[in-house]
Structures are given as structure tokens and as C-alpha cells.
Length: 127
Image (cartoon, rainbow, N blue to C red; front, side, top):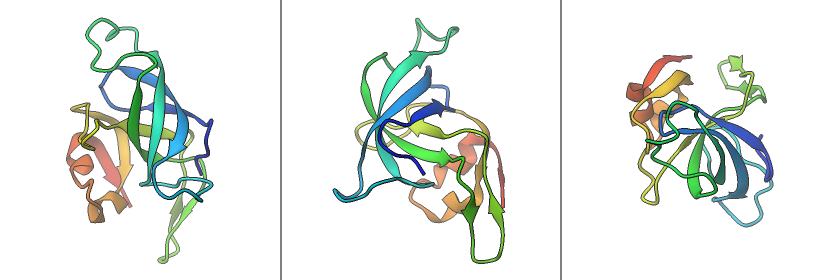
């Protein structure tokens, strides 16, 4: 569960390292976002190596897709999983991916969403 003012790590190669949630994109009465939801984030820190060639700037607002949460995700076939950190992937204004690679594995639940391209960009996928 990601709420407003949550700290998140960025797991693609756009140049950002940490982000901070400042808004939820879906619905005005929504209190938290879960795996696969879109949120609005501000970039807090950049990666050391890519600081000069970064595609994003510190302090800029970007939409982001939640791909990992610390909260356990349960499914109807009695399978559940969770991660050690809350992670996002940054998007541009047209909801296209800014980065070209995704570090780490991604849940296969993204196969049935409009962000199916995530599976091909990531290092691996599971359940």
C-alpha cells in the first residue's frame, strides 16, 4: 500500500534513484495505491553515475507505475508474495516508459494490463 508522502525507489535506468509520492492518479477518494496503480511522484535523488546524462531532473514531477510493494499480495490461487522495498517505474506525460531497462524481477500480473511491455524490459518475472 502506497500512501501520499511514501518514499519509493526507482528501478529503471532513467537516472532517478529515490522518489516521493505526492498524489494518486486514480479517483479523488482513494486513500492508497496498490501494485499496478499510477501515482504522481517527485524525484528526490539521482544516481551517481548517470547524474550528468540523466533523462530526469531532480525536483521534477512524473507519473509512476507501482511494480513492487512491501505489503503482501494475495491471489485467488492461494499464492502470495511481497518485496523488501516499495518500487516504481517512471513514465512520461503520455504514460510511456522513460527508461529502457528495468532492474530486478517483476510479477507476471502485468501480463494482463496495458503495461505488458514491462515484462520484456525486466530482467525476469515470477508467478
